Image (cartoon, rainbow, N blue to C red; front, top):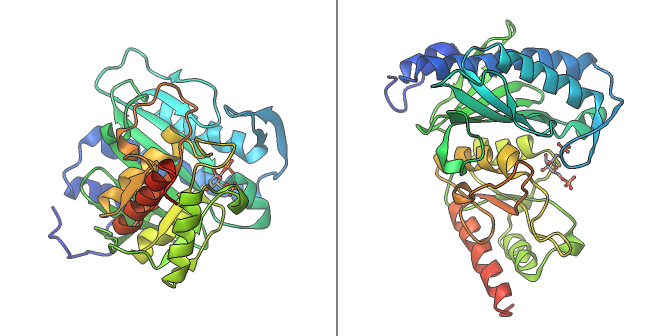
Length: 317
Ligand code: AFP
């Protein structure tokens, strides 16, 4: 186990996971997802940016890249030898890749979140939520691990297994080596990332924006969940929200594929993640395509959001 605070740079992902005492099958699984990212990078850099002519779980038009990156992830997970079931944001149901194998993991993943940003050359990412056993329809607090890979100017991988948040960078040999261990967030935000149409915000969210702006908190929003969350994690300060909207009481972001993994990562870095009315990680999902409002980042700002939203419910705003 590495001493807290001491960082041995040039330590690769597999060795770091071993030194952190992780279970071998989980180490193998996280490294397999890291391996898949190398092929997804190639598809982003060289692939066709057109439409696939199909739609996903949410009835949204799929891009060729969505289908290709989903195929890369699914094949890698199915061949890993440690995965029982998979659920993809790009798929329509849970797929049994090894139904009779017990003691394994199941993975809910978004193979290329923000894919519509690739054709304007903005950063996108892969998100994975890992559960022990066969069931992915569990509260996020039951995740064995959560991770994302950010395809930006640099390619980085950020994971947690419940023992802190750790960042790795891809080097010229396409190996992931340690950049930051035990990423921590300050109690108050210096940046904010407001998703959704401002004109459809409810009074509580509008009050939150006004409060943040009055306190000099700067707007930083790219439209990609992975780079937007990564920014506030690595700066150690910020709040992201994609709120409930007039006409969309549950917002837009997906509970299994976006909220739960990001919520675990941010909580493990000392932040908070709320639906605006309760802790994201305690929501019990009933179906794959659930969406929820999302307020995620510095603890004090998430609490402020919950306070304003509670007051709007009582007509106090
Ligand atoms: P896609 O994966 O369908 O491109 O959606 C990405 C996303 O869910 C998430 O990455 C962003 O936070 C959110 O959409 C942005 O939504 P808006 O475009 O409505 O701001």
